[in-house]
Amino acid sequence: MTNKIRKFDTKVQYLNYKVIREVARKAWNRSLMEGMIDIPKIIVPGNEPTMRCCVYKERAILAERVKIAVGGDSSNPNIIEVIDIACDECPKGGYDVSENCRGCLAHRCEDVCKRGAIYFDSQQKAHIDKSKCVDCGMCAKVCPYSAIINRRRPCENACKVKAISMNPETYAAKIDNDKCIECGACVYQCPFGAVMDKSFVVNVVDMLKKSNNNENYHVYAVVAPAVASQFKFAKRGQVVAGIKALGFYKVEEAALGADMVAFEESKELTEKGFLMSSCCPAFVSYIDKTFPQLKEFVSHNLSPAAVMGKYIKEKDKGAKVVFIGPCTAKKSEARKPEVRQYIDSVITFEELQALFDSRDIEITELEEESFSGASYFGRIFARSGGLTEAVAQGIAEHKISFEYKPLTCNGIEECRTALLKKNKNVLAANFIEGMACVDGCIGGAGCLTHGEKNRTAVDAYGKEAEEDIGSISDSVARHDCPSTAKSE
Image 1 (cartoon, rainbow, N blue to C red):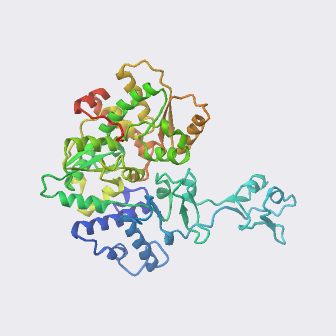
Image 2: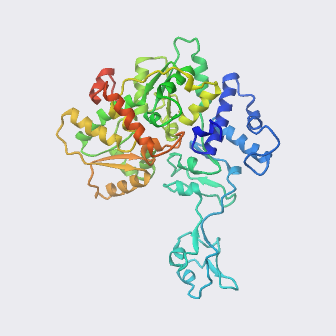
């Protein structure tokens, strides 16, 4: 493996990175998008395939990756897209009879199947008629040899909101936009890279090019606190320096926006008596699509990223804001009417690495530049439980007498359980911290790497702030921060 591969968890991530890197190079060097057709040949220069059965199919799939890397299908509002021609290696899926079937006489599988989908060959071995099977799994439960197995696809296993199914005509994965919360779990888990999130690096490059020698046009980078767990091959200050080397006017902490949100959200909770966090866009989307009757309980505050965008644009009327973080759902959030006025584009940490290399910026060779401004509590928003701690601190700093009973939901499955209980009025908690990704933002699909040590890195990053800023209110007052409320 080369040094660049070690920057990523998987070779699929590395492949996506290479496509986005080449797209960015074209965008830097051309005013128009000519030359994009050459990218597949740049990545696979010879006549031998590197990953697929033949070089022509490999290049055809790369061409589809390029389309998504320059914004994807404009008629599809979903940030997540499926590359049909890349999604052809998984089995059809569903329940199947393995070689463990002993051809027993009991035939419990047949008895329990209400659809008549089980039949037997001359050796009494069971088979499943896929045209009748509804994947209820009853046959698997009663088989004494555990011979019936569920061959679910990795993307289906990853999607906890059941938004992914199999297209019955092409057998490619199909996304139900009415259920999808754009968390990107399927993107990260697909072993063939057949599911991708749309990239807006071209828009970011265009903004940076426009800012050259334009004193009234400033492009700000707002970086998520999850950066503490990323770019482990370099120092954090070198990452900041690299972002500025790309042409960004200033680099700001999204953690400062988290301080603002925690300060306001803690007060809102004490006033309303019950509240659900608005920080995770995938969690908010899940409520909108699955539990719309509970929308009234979602905090009225914008997310930390949007709050920082608002803060920047109120101070600099010529500002453009790019959020950089681990979240694919943030790309969708930035399109919402109440947010798009504050965030102009979103890229992931994967895409940031591609931007660095598109300009041949080796961040390990740069002099460090520092972040400043956020408190410990703003920085720990990056991991599950961080918001819960920050709200507790906010209540204490407001000096309000309130019995705080929080529930930290780590992953969308825990969120679902909590929302079901709230819907039935049997939830004991009065505050729900909802994080769609397991471990919180540090488990986001757009991370370079995912691992257990990421939480430790975020906590260490937070403790660095304690020396300068001892409280949330100090952080907010220090910056004379505006209201975090959503615009009507």
